[in-house]
Image (cartoon, rainbow, N blue to C red):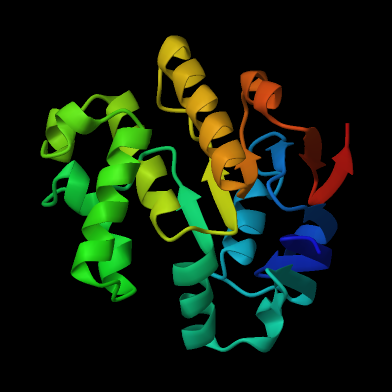
Length: 220
């Protein structure tokens, strides 16, 4: 069974079509790069897959659940349990340490204290931030903040990670290191990843590349 199945999805805003019948799928542990120019519909598609917005027609299925059939509370629960997002600008909570940022989604999911702390310690080590675990976000470099964001995304043991330009705010060397980390953790945790990007470098960690233009998706 595919972790993600998008079937003939359409979306318009103010009468202007943004997505015109998009279909794609991701299998367990598969990494797919989604490329395309600005305005092609990539961000809209991510918002629909993440359950932030609803499609006008078509279906999106994640881990066997059809988003169209879920109400807002159920979509929120699905995000908290099965879908994580890694953003270009990290989106760390500025008043929490690196450790606490990683811990936060587990607190939301009411994971018991001992289990939660063990999980966060393991993730901190996995992304190579043992020495920075108690630093505040403003004390971290861009690469370190993205490592925190990746650890936070992994904390809920998601079936799917949506990565929105994960190297777009990093220099090339740091971006390459983050790509290698995404490849390592993706393989280790068998988590599917849809990586939206302008960077061809991302394709080296992905099994497939899809091109998005004018609200449609086609394989390269």
